[in-house]
Structure formats: C-alpha cells, structure tokens
Length: 411
Image 1 (cartoon, rainbow, N blue to C red):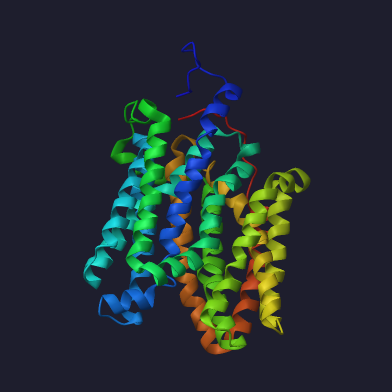
Image 2 (image 1 turned 60 degrees about the vertical axis):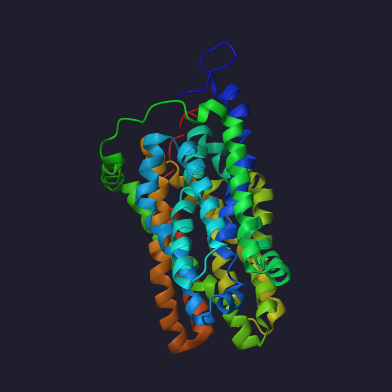
C-alpha cells in the first residue's frame, strides 16, 4: 500500500521516497546491533569460560548457538514479514533480540547461556533480511544496490569495531557488560523505529496468504531465475562465508606466527574495504553498471584469494584483506539486490530464502575447506577457492538475467 501525502492522497514515488527512506539510518543501526551480536564473543571466550566454569573449547559452542537459529529461522521469518509487515516484524524481532541479549548478561551456567544465545540468533535473523526486503519494496531497482550499501554500513561498522571494542569493554568491566551495551543499542534502536513510524508501524491487516506464505517458497523455486540466484548464493556462501574467509585469521597465526590480537586486527581490514565500497557503490554502479561490477568484483576477488596463498609476508595479507572486502561487496552486493527482486509479491520470503542458501553454503564450505587444509594446507585451500570463485563469477554473469524495474512505494 502506497504512503499518503498530507492531503490523504496516495503519494507518488518521488514524494514517498523522501519520508520513507528517512528511516534508513535507524535500519543501519539495527544491522549494527545484529552484527555486534554475531561477533562480540570472539575476544570474550576466555572470560566467559572462566566465569561459567568451563573451557574455551566448551564455550565456543555459543558461536554456533547463535548462528544456527539465525539461519534456520529464516524459513519462518520471511513469511511472517510478508504477512504481518516487514518493519513490524523487524521491530518486534529487534526488541526481542535486545531483551535476550540483556538476559545473556545474567546467565549463570553454560546451558542457560546456550539457550539465550539461540534466542538472540532466532530474533536477530529478522533484522537484516526484512530490512533488505523493505528496501526492495520502496526503492527502484536502479537505485537499490546503492541504497542497500548505505544500509549495510551498519553491519560493516560492526565488523570493524566489535572485536576491539568488545575486548576492551570486557577486559575493563567484564564480559556481561558487553552484552548489556549491545542490548541497550538494540532496544534504543527498536524504540526509535517505533517512535519514528508511530501508528503506521501497527496499522494494517495481515495479508491474505495461506500457511503464513510458505507456499511462496514453492512458487519461488518454480522460477528459473530465482533458482539460479539461490544456487549462486549457496556457492557464494560455500566458497567465501564458510570457505576462505573464516580461515584467514588462523592462517596468519599458524603460517606467519602472529598473535591472535594481531591477526584479529588484520582480519578487521576486511571491514575497511567493505566501508570503502559503501561509500563508492553509487559511483561504481554508474561507471561500470551492475553486470560489469559483479564481473570485475568477482574476478578481482579471485585474484586476491590467490594472492593470499602466495603472500610472502603478513603485511601483504593485510593489504589483500582490505581489497577482499571491497571486491567481495562488488560481487555480493549485486546478488543481494537481485534477491529483493526474485519474488516481488513476497519479497521477505525471497530474501530469507537467499539468506538461508548462504547459510547452507557456509555450513558445507567450512567442512570442505577443512578437508583441503588437512590435505594441502592453506595455500591449496585459498588457490582452490580462487579458481572456483572465478568460475562462479563467469557463470553468474552469464546465467543471471537483468530484472525489470519495479514500482516503488510498497509498505
């Protein structure tokens, strides 16, 4: 339903875009809170293990306890967003996420902590996919990727800041304070979204889709372009999210003998490259166009991955890590934009399916990369990822069609 102007008439796209997109910084703040939840335990595991009378190996399961529900709950969260309203479900999810984060700060045992981390992952899964779907409803396709890059600034800043800030706060005030700070950010942001939208957030009736819209998944899979996009997302997750990216830190520690905190700073360089992309996405799109940006980003990313395997010293890895952040979003940003157009009549379901495909690929990729490490070391792993990334880029460039530009203004 299109927004109304001051006279109660349906506003046109140009009129609707300005007030509607004013909420984008708050959605970026919500993405920041989610990103913090994903990464805040990285430097805190020894502190949590000590307080909960466990070992670091035992509390490491708390990372999976967040990630697994985050991915699996996409099956439900997308249809919920399509039926009850994307921003409504997002706001409720963000508030629930904040409350669960606060509860984590009071956990007295590892079992309690695992259950609460699972709750944060399940609620946090509502935020980024539904925000992307909402952007798809309200921004013309030719402007969408640049708008998504502005929204993703929140997640990028979380990647940059969470590790060092979480470690510093945890060292000074204890690990529980880190959860409380993250909870505060989430709850304040949820309150700000609710206050900004006012009655509009709760206005309207559920859409009439059966079984909470689960039949839309079958409709999505019947569309060949959507199937190709989901396959590309799965392979993207396999090669990068579960394959090369998670192992760069251990590569720096084991092959270049860096301390863990030093490796963490180098890995954070990915966020610098990603931040550069968010600032230049519009110019890159105007210069290259969407398809060439995906092609150039993917091929340069494959070269950077090969460079990791051949790097003689760790500063070379540090430079490549920043470039990887830039090139990755040049490729992945196109896929994100395409996911918002895979099923326009059930956009949240489509974006959640995209996130689920990434999650499944990540799970398979971590296993496959582990096998490569055992048999050929980091060099073989990164070179394999580089070659397959080049193949995936060329295939995606040929297989993915250009969608038609939709009409903005949906709610």
